[in-house]
Image (cartoon, rainbow, N blue to C red; front, side):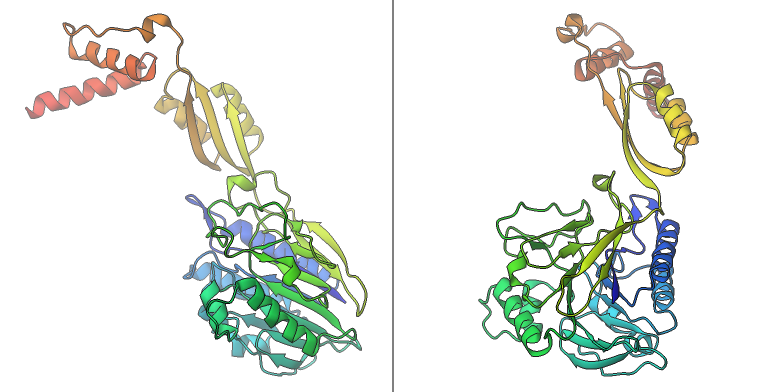
Length: 407
């Protein structure tokens, strides 16, 4: 049985002011091609389908069209759970219609998906809060999936039925998962867990959450450890962290698949992937990370020459750039215009001014007898350890002239 694991689509997300929607269309189309090319039997999307609780209509449209395409006309079940960026009620709301198309949404941890049979497709043969068993027509064994979408600690306790509000999150999840695994997950089927949580190997290094993300880890209170995962699970499909990694600490893989695109400059240089899992009952799974090719690459570039910066920008048009320019003077407006005209993917320009070591400037004394432009020049040199350029002086004179007219 082949299972495709992906997560953290963040549909509708922008990088500062720059929309990523067209890149998202391209990469989701690529994921659909991968699913078909490898004859995938099931797709798991492990949370953060959208970037906000109220996504733009274009993002909603893209999600439904992509999931519908991934179902292969209802023959391939697609399980999509909510992440911390998603509104759980929004994820659950289209469930009745979506199920008929082969899309199984799980927004809240207490969702029970009804038993159904999709015509010419699959059947849900067992179901309980946070669990479903699926039977595919071309396999003589089922797949069992424990689903835990994101919820904060208090909501998880409520949804999972804990009366003791002092229960630790790890113990609560361990007990809930173990009860489902012991009840349903024997060695005669494939057993998978999918969740959108911050999961860590006990004693392992703290894994960095992506820049700009809503953090799940507050101190150590919200860390879930891999030793909570039932031993019956053959693979755990995670969402939240945007770098592909096997967390470890369990007898089977515990994997963050990565986001399909780099969504912050802290992710520059990361290879984005989906994970293809090959599984059969009572055996270790084989999994392969498949690199994704779509989308603009993110670069952090630093130049001390404007000409070199422009040359690189012209040679690398299809990327998004955080550009640091080192200079001994402020960047003039015509230079900024030249930079922006050379590339349409500049997100940030960070000027770095090199302060002069000139002893004369370091010990500068202000001559109070000079005119206001001279005073401004001396002030500027004392503040920034360099001479103001002509453009700044012209702007200063314009301000002074306007003030004089108003007076």
